[in-house]
Amino acid sequence: MTNETRQLLLDALLSCRAIRGYTAEIDFAAYKRDDMVRDAVERRLGIIGEALNRATVLEPALANDRRFGAVHCICRHCLMSISRCWRGCRPRR
Image 1: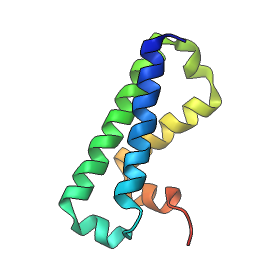
Image 2: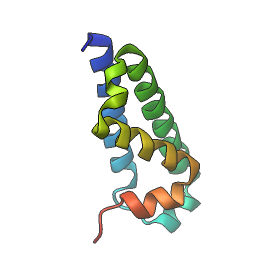
Image 3: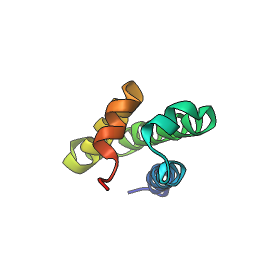
């Protein structure tokens, strides 16, 4: 794996952690009301998607890795439907 690919995967990981931090203390209703949080989450999802797309171009074998494919699929679905993603990805309390 190249250093560039590692950096892209690190960018994706850091964006995941940022999203978790932005949303840790709020429910979905609060998320929908807060334009700043919503914009930040959607921006980070875009970063994740772009990083994963570029990583698969640099390392085509990643596209065949089921774990990698699952993360990529989740990100695409989150961008299409934040509410569905919220229900599926949030830890249960």
